[in-house]
Every structure is written in structure tokens, then in C-alpha cells.
Image 1 (tube, rainbow, N blue to C red):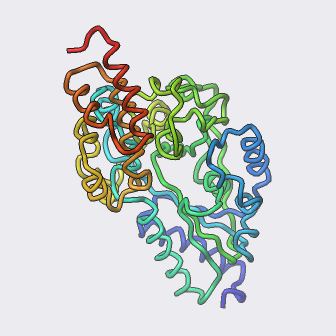
Image 2: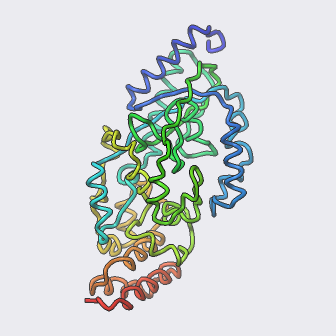
Image 3: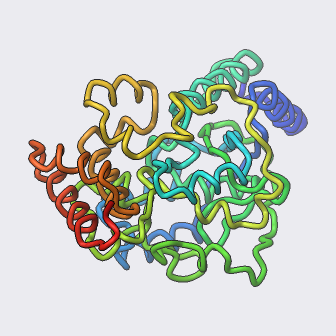
Amino acid sequence: MKNLLTKDALNTLAQSIKNWGETLGFQHVGISDTRLVEAENHLQNWVKKGFHGEMDYMHKHGLKRSRPELLIEGTQRIISVRMDYLPESLTTINQQLDNPLNAFISRYALGRDYHKVLRNRLQKLAKKIESEVGVFGYRAFVDSAPVLEKAIAEKAGLGWIGKHSNLIDRKAGSWFFLGEIYTDLRLPVDKKVSAHCGSCVACLDICPTQAIVAPYQVNARRCISYLTIELQGSIPVELRTLIGNRIYGCDDCLLICPWNRFAKHTQETDFNPRHNLNSLQLLEAFNWSEDLFLKKMEGSAIRRIGYVRWLRNIAVALGNAKPSFQIKTALLKKKNHSSDLVKEHVEWALKRQLLSPNLL
């Protein structure tokens, strides 16, 4: 039946898809074609500079990331969706970040793993389309394949890519997840919106490690999100003090962006903080056993870094905290940990604690 759809029918279907998406909990649904020439050039130049660090998946798939029809044969259009995840006020987030004894976790990871939430909704949307037009070709993605999700969302009219490389919606900021449905339906496409960053460089100035080396250019090797999540080995010594108390990801460029004053709290209960992760203390988190870590992180995006990197990250944060007897004691208990990675970062943190003349 899909091959018999007229232009008018496709126009009607596109509007229906947007309505169905809203009913399923997406705050914005847009449609784009598959031409990503500009984004492809940007990606290739980024990789050539080595800004991807150890993220080999950013280039190992060749052109499949920037040419959707190579990834899924027959792809004609991409349905792009947005789902807001901001769990609390920006004031509350800043207060948590400003307390060096708090274990700061990027707000996208406080609740249930977003991959599962969005993928489930996208499948429901695809099934709804199928019930309307019959069997059609499609594949749903949520940060799970070589997909240029931000460039696609930009083409679909969901916002513009800001100088920090995140997508921004002028009415909703940038605290949201993205997902896609690649399809062989030749739906009408939406218009790309204009950019509105202007002369603002707040995100460049606020970045703790100066990872945003120029507008629209992020050196992942310096990015705290990369260092605490993607990096497998040792965190470079020269960057450790700049990480502060951020143990999983970093939200600084989102917190400072003026467009995020329009961000709305999520309506998805799945994105609400679990296990008080939004107010977790460093010492408490550092004292978790591996079993407790796995139990508390069940169904969470944080689980993917594993217990060893969890301890690595917290050790760095403890080394950056004001020296105290409690911190020193906790670090000493992990000094002979079975993981060399943990031991290295614990030893660094202990030196930081012991070298301070203010040790209590």
C-alpha cells in the first residue's frame, strides 16, 4: 500500500506521524531527507584532527554514518524525534555541582536508560504507521548505530547545532534526547531552522577543560564526558584537577546556555532520579561494593562504564575535594585495590590530600 500513496496522502501521513509522536511522549517530531554533505565534511575533518580520541566507532563504519542509505538500504527519509529529560531546576543542579563533596552526575543519566525508553516509543510509532499504510521499510535508532543524529535533527527542523555541538531549540533549550526512524516512505520534509547563537561564547568560556576549542569544534580528548565515560584507561594527570566533582559526564555547557532558560521539566517519570543519584555524596558512592553498584545501576546508562571506572572517576573527585580525615581513610581502603587503574587514581588522590596543609 505504501507504494500507492499519493502526494496528498503522504502529506496527511506526515502530519499524523507528528500527532502520534506527540501522543507517545515526544515533544517534537520532524522529517528530513538523507543528504548530509556538510555534516559529513565536518565529521571527516573532526576525525582527521584526532578529536574523537578512542572513539573509533566514529569512523570505522566508513560513510555509513553520514549516508543513511548505505546503512539501511532503501532509506528515503528520516523521522527525527525529541524527548525532554530535564529532571529538576537549573538552580538545584548548580547547587549540587557547586558542592565539592557531591558526586555530580550528568542529568541525562539520573533515571532509566534513555536508549530503552526512546527505542520502545519509536517502535510503537513505527507500528502505528504500519497499521495505517501496511508493511513498510524502517529501522529505529537511539544512539545505537552510526547515525549523525544531531545533523539529522537539525535538517528535520528540531533546532540548530550550537557552538558546543549540541542541538538547541529556541523554545526548549537543549536538555533532550534524540531518536530516529529511517524509512523508505517518501514523506514531505521539514525546513531547517536558522541558528541563533549569535556572538555568544558562554559555552566555550565555561568549559572546565576548554574542550570546546573553537565554535562548533569539540576536542573529545579534553571533554569531561569523554574522560569519565568513553575513556577506558587513565585520565590524563593534567586534566584531573579540572574535572572537579564530576564523576559521570558534564553539564556545564548546558547550564550556561541562555536558551536553556526556556527548558521545561520532563514529563517522563522514567527520567526522574533513581536512588537519590541527584544528591549522591562522593564518599557514599566510593564505598559501594561492586554488587551494590550493579544493583543500583540496573537499567541505568551509568552501568556501561563498569565498577572500576566508577571508582576511578570518584577517586579523582575525592582528590579534588577539600582534604579531610574521612576522605583520606576512604582512599586508603582502596589503595591496594585489585585494579591497577583504580590504584593509580587513588594514589594520585591521596597525594593531593596529604600534600595539603589543611588536612584535618
